[in-house]
Length: 103
Image (cartoon, rainbow, N blue to C red; front, side, top):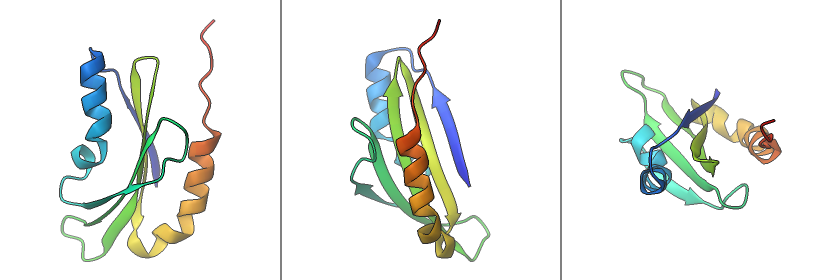
């Protein structure tokens, strides 16, 4: 599954801290690995973890973007055996995101 989450921290320092710890905050027990950014200025991490009460490990990626005071998290989370099949579609989705200007 791919999920998009957004938060609007009150201060620039809070936004920076949220971007820095995005993967660890969402997946505290996972093994995280820094990956090359998919879009300039983003943070991109891979993760691998065992699900709660689930024998099958889960894996995926988290891309964190900041725009206009909002921090966006685009998360791919799937059974580890399926993640490799979804990575290209995930990367295409993240690279296709654009921010519209408000009228």
